[in-house]
Each structure stands twice: as structure tokens, then as C-alpha cells.
Image 1 (cartoon, helix red, strand yellow):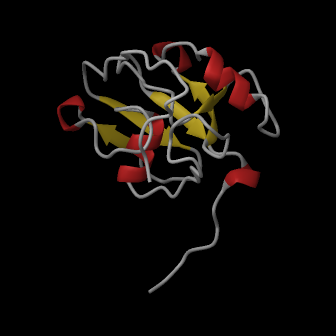
Image 2 (tube, rainbow, N blue to C red):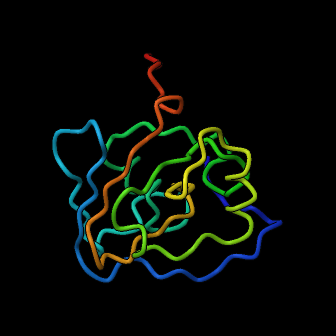
Image 3 (cartoon, rainbow, N blue to C red):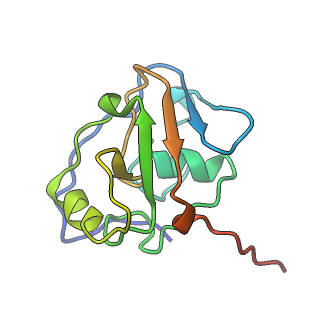
Length: 135
């Protein structure tokens, strides 16, 4: 899916400037992110957590395609969140619709790490996609 929400002002958020890692609770190994490879895809802002997680095989719901029009990619950034720009109003509005909101809540599609520090991310239990479609 992916694309741009035409109703939102798009800020120019730079992708990471240096390599960093993203540890997702429940995964055995951290994800190594090389900024030279960003963006990976077209879901979420370039270099966003959604972009990173999807590219590395973590199935994270994102019903709107990563354009901040839903809250299905809600995650908790437990460490390293200060390396991401603060949420803009559109993200805050969508987070208000997410269950189990915490101070560390972010929409993965809008959260773009700078690479200044490694991140620890948790996907809320209610948001884990346990169903997998097959051919």
C-alpha cells in the first residue's frame, strides 16, 4: 500500500546519519540498520520504524499504508525515543485512538530514528498479527 496522506503537511525528516540497532522485544537478534540502505520501502516515512521493521520481516499491521491515518502500527519505543523527532499533531491525534496508550507510544510509520542511539521497541500484545496468509 503506502503513499502520502494528502490532508497532512509533510515535514522533511532526515533519515539516520549513522548505523544503529533496533531491538524488538521477543526477537532474538537486534536489527542492524545501515543508513546507506534507507529507505527500504514505501510504507511510512522514509527511514521510519515501520519501514525498518517491515524490511526485516516483522509483520506489523499498518492498515492505512503508513500515512498516519490510523493507529494500527502503534508501538512502544522503550529506549532511544529521544533520537526520534517528537510526534506531530496528526500522529498525536491518531495515537489518541490507540488502545493501551503509554508515554512511550509512537506510530511506527511516523517515528524516524536519527541513529544517535540504539532503540528498544515493543509491539503491544493486542497489535501482534499472529495470522499469516499463504498462497
